[in-house]
Length: 260
Length: 137
Image 1 (cartoon, rainbow over the protein chains, first blue to last red):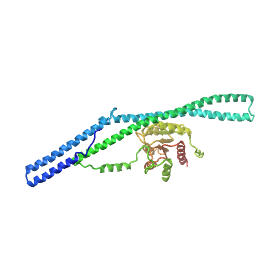
Image 2: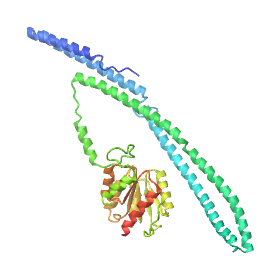
Image 3: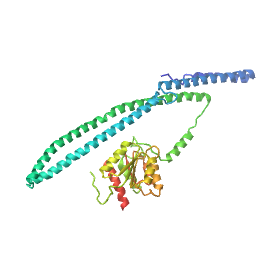
Image 4: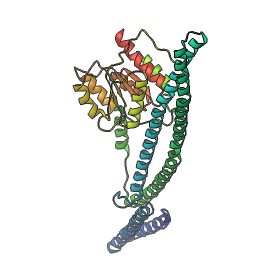
């Protein structure tokens, strides 16, 4: 990373300007027009030189930042940003796969459990009949066969349910992988932010020398206008913020206050 | 556990459109609806695909997400309410959008119910019942 020192040149620039300004006053007092113009030219020269220096630093800083972040001129696949997008796409793919795998396993297990449940209920009914001595001998033979079948079927079903449940557990392994990817993307974004702050500081130096002032009022007005338009924002991470509901009960309270 | 209000005779054959851009969420909602006995469901992945389906099919109920590419759920709701044929269609919004302003906007646009994600099967069931209770009364 290149060191970005924005203030190192400022004192000498200030000092040079101050010395030249004092010189200019002296020359004006003396009334020598040729010398006055000479000092004015010197002032311009110092300003231009410093400006070139600062723009040079800004350009180099920008270049270094892009190199450090491996960001090309465009967001190609090898750039840091391109990679970050790919990584996040990978997170979506992994979570999608895990969610579908989990649902497949649950959907597969649910009817097996229903079969166990309904089988037990049916046998219990017939067993009750047997205990009350309401079963005929052939019905009893039928029952013993059913009980026998139930014993083996329940074991098959239960084994499958157990194996699906442990596969559901295994399907959560995406959390580790996606967590790592997200941490790396977060780190990249933090680096980009730090770089941008440095660049803004350097550009500020150029602004000072050229006497440019930026106004931010337009931007604020636009933000205020935007807030009138309600749009989707995605999940609220911090539900303690003002204007954010904390769960379904809050939603219900708000809706009932609106007459729902 | 919840109790099934027997006074609301919900038509288990009613035709439901589930709109969400994430297929997993559509699957979850469809599964929950199936658990509640509603099996006549169709899917769309955003408002732009949902609207023509609603206009040409005789849907009885719309369950939609808010945040979707193409046409959002809020815009879909506005289109439904502005359409003479569809304006009385019950619309349940199931969304992660959790700002008061947003919920108020959805209410003003004519939403019939609002469920914030993450939600439970019990909440979904309760809201569906409430919507049809109100329609019948």
